[in-house]
Image (cartoon, rainbow, N blue to C red; front, side, top):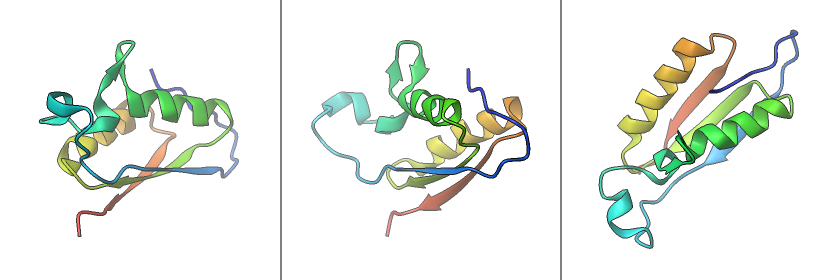
Length: 93
């Protein structure tokens, strides 16, 4: 579960996820790499948790392939962590 620090500090972080890639084959046919399950959570959740543990509360997520799935993930995170902010940047073009 995503855990974000509070306290009025403004800390920002970013994670670039751009191309579909082919090395993971069928695993990414319908799921973008950041949403692949690692130890019960999407990879991007582990990254955001680590950044949040370091004091970051605002995130920019650059998307491309299957960006709609990343947006659904963002909505779930926002619903369970109202103190977090993430801005999507669609990089399909």
